[in-house]
Every structure is written in structure tokens, then in C-alpha cells.
Length: 220
Ligand SMILES: CC(C)(COP(=O)(O)OP(=O)(O)OC[C@H]1O[C@@H](n2cnc3c(N)ncnc32)[C@H](O)[C@@H]1OP(=O)(O)O)[C@@H](O)C(=O)NCCC(=O)NCCS
Image (cartoon, rainbow, N blue to C red; front, side):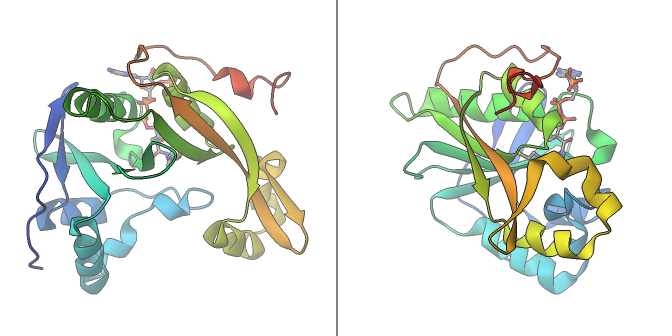
């Protein structure tokens, strides 16, 4: 697998180094544990196929508005995150993923904290941070809440990949996310939260607990 190196610099902070994708890191991600439905879209097992790995690396190294980072601890890939620096809604964070074998150590929080801190310092007049997330991803929302994200909008969204899986899985498999999905106008939709963090908002990485918008009394 040979491709041109990406032109942006790594980011260091919070015990992590966020590096642009390279062939070695792609091989490490191919070996990550997987979660399956309903988090299948994040799984990286497809990178075991050399052709798909080469395509994914080429995609991640393209010049453009998106930057794709892999969070490393002593050279070991422990998470990934992407950001669109030119989205009209703000610095748009996506593909936030920590494999099961590395979760529970604050990798997600530290990775996003390092990314946002670096951007706030290098682009002092940049916009706020935005992300969207399926409403069933409660674990992710605890992290976003600790980092200062607030829920600004709830919408029903047609996610092609998730909808395809919802047709395939057994009703029992749908049950854990039943209140987050609906069948409407002939297709499956998933409830999606849009969240925003004002630049400079304090981050409390160790804050635990459920995000307030998951309180059953306040669930939109
Ligand atoms: C959601 C996901 C990214 C969370 O990754 P993570 O690294 O385990 O998440 P966190 O950073 O919150 O850390 C988990 C725990 O470590 C603790 N922690 C936080 N900072 C810490 C630190 N510096 N040292 C040790 N532990 C720490 C936190 O208290 C947290 O526990 P809590 O959630 O019970 O409060 C991961 O589970 C995942 O990839 N899930 C599937 C894909 C997904 O849902 N992505 C998000 C879509 S929007």
C-alpha cells in the first residue's frame, strides 16, 4: 500500500498523539475489535481486505476540508476522529470511534479535547464545534456533555446503512434501540441529536453521569 503522505501536522495532548492516517495505522485499525449492530458503521474489519484498505487510506489522505486523525498512545492506535473544517455549521466533528479493547479510559474525551484545544489555539477566529449523533449513543453523549457540548436540535434522519440493517436484524435485536427509531412513510428513521460546543467552553474530562438530555423526563 503506497500513497502520498498527508500534509497536516500531528496534534499532541492529553496523553495522545493524533496522527494523519498511514499504512501502518490502517493495519492496526484492521485488527480492532468490532461492536456490530447498531454500531456496525464504525467497525473497521473491512480494512483487512487490502483493496478496501488502500481505498480507505487514499480517501483519508485526500486534500480538502476534512482531516482524518488516528489517536495513538506510544504508537498504538486507540481511537479515530475526523473533522470538516469548512462545514457551514461550524467545525464539524464526525467518525468518533474508540474500539472496545481501548474504551473506558477516557480516550474519546482526551482525543476530542486535544483536537479542539489545538484548533482553538491555531485558529483563534474559527467557528464553534458541531457534531451529530444517533440518540441511542448514550455513552458517547456522556463524553460530549463532559466536553461542553449542548443539545441544540433533535431531528428524524434516514440513515441508509442503518435502515438497511434494520430490515435485516431480528425484532429482538431492534429492541434495545426501539425508542430511538421509527418506521415512517415506508422507511426506517433514526432520531438524531445535533450538538454544539462554543469554542473555549470549559471541559471537565472526568465528569461522569448521564447527559441531561437523556433524563427520561427531559428526553425530547
Ligand atoms: C462512544 C465511544 C467513542 C466512547 O469511547 P471511550 O474512550 O470509552 O469514552 P470516554 O472518553 O467517555 O471514556 C469512558 C470512561 O472513561 C472515563 N475517563 C474519562 N477521562 C478519563 C481519563 N483521563 N482517564 C481514565 N478514565 C477516564 C470516563 O469517566 C468514562 O466513563 P463514563 O462514561 O462512565 O463517565 C466508544 O464507546 C465508541 O466508539 N462507541 C461506538 C461508536 C460510537 O458510538 N461513536 C460515537 C458516535 S456519535
